[in-house]
Amino acid sequence: MRPLAIVGIILIVLGVVALAYQGITYTTKEKVV
Image (cartoon, rainbow, N blue to C red; front, top):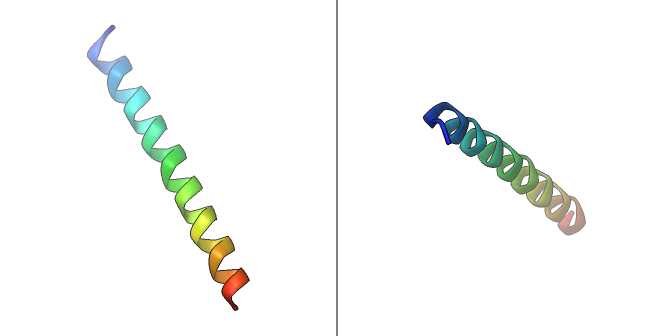
């Protein structure tokens, strides 16, 4: 694989994880309140 492809995949994975983490923390905060 090309280095650019690897970097792109890493960025996409990080973005998905960040979105999922934000969604989880948001829902838990709403449930607590």
